[in-house]
Each structure stands twice: as C-alpha cells, then as structure tokens.
Image 1 (cartoon, rainbow, N blue to C red):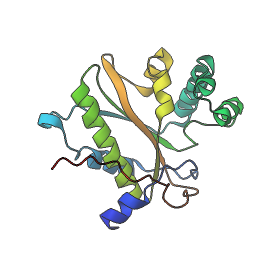
Image 2: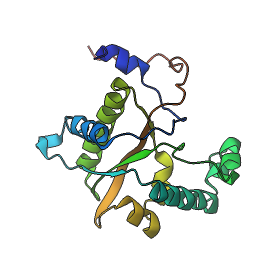
Image 3: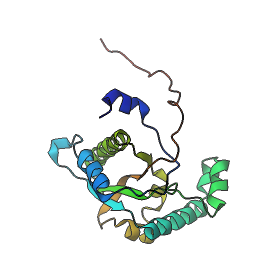
Image 4: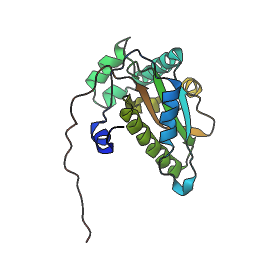
Amino acid sequence: MPDFFDVLKGRRSVRSYSEEPVSEEQLQELVDLAILAPSAMNLQPWRFTVITNRQALADVNTRVKEILCEQHIAEKMKMENLQAALSAPDFSIFYHAPALVVITAEKGNTVAAIDCQLAAENLFLAAHARGLGTCYMGFLFFGQEDPKVREALRIPDGHEMVAACCVGHPAAMPEGPPQRRPAHIDWVR
C-alpha cells in the first residue's frame, strides 16, 4: 500500500486510458472506499451508478457533445481547444475510459451534495492508490437535465448528479504536480 501522502501528492486527472477494462471487483472496492467519507449526521445520502457498457458511454458522449455545441459552451468559456475537440468525431469527453462512476443525491439537499463530493474525493484517491486513473466529469453537468442523458446514467427521478468521474488504467500519467499558488490564509489569533 503506498504512503497516504504520496497518494495525495501524486494523484492527477488522467485523460488517456488503455483499453484494459476495470473489473467489477475493483469498481466495487472504489465505491466501498468512497462511502467511508464523512457524512453529515451519518445520513450517507449518496447513490452510485457505475457504467461499463461501451455503447451507453458512447451514447452519452455523443449527446453531451451535442449539448455542449448547442449551448456554445466552448465559446462562452473562451476555450478554442474545446471547440476543436468537440468537432472531432473521435473525441470522447470520457477520454475513452472503460468506466464511469456517477454519484447522485436527492435534489435540493445541500448537505447531501457536500457529502457526495467528499465521497468522490475518496474514490479519486483510492483509485490512484490502486494504480487506476480518474478524471472529474464536469462536462456531464451540462447534460444532466437532458432526458436521454438522465436515462443512460440512470439518474432517478427527484435526484441530481452531484459528482462523476471516469475510471480506467492510465495509458499515460500527466507529468509532475501542477503549479499551485501558495494558499491564501487569513489567521485569526
């Protein structure tokens, strides 16, 4: 087992995955470790959907790319490289990862949203400790109200997506830690 601080310092968002599938046992372990996250009043409000079906991932990818183009997200975010990527037929918002984990909670429950984000961070760190890569799937949020996306991701009525990540075996790991500005700290003594 790697040292916790090495895991914390070494985790990166992976955007290149091998074809190797992630086993159900590995994905189950990641969810089991995710739910060890803190939970307000121990309510444990999270619900997980794990998608490994390649066609389902391809369908969601296609629909979310359409939504991003329809809403002119790349232009609004001033991201020329995103616009080019969205027009490329082989671009996958999941970076061709073999698995997607979606965490949902009841709509409007602010505390649940926080708990689910904490569970997601546990999942990211656990995946890295096990030699797997993850990448947060922020683009999915643009499609979470779309009926086709909701159905494919099995988001239950009355629930909303709170976090999502792709999971897979890295084909390449990003280099070194990203540059971080020193934390701004206001000390009250």
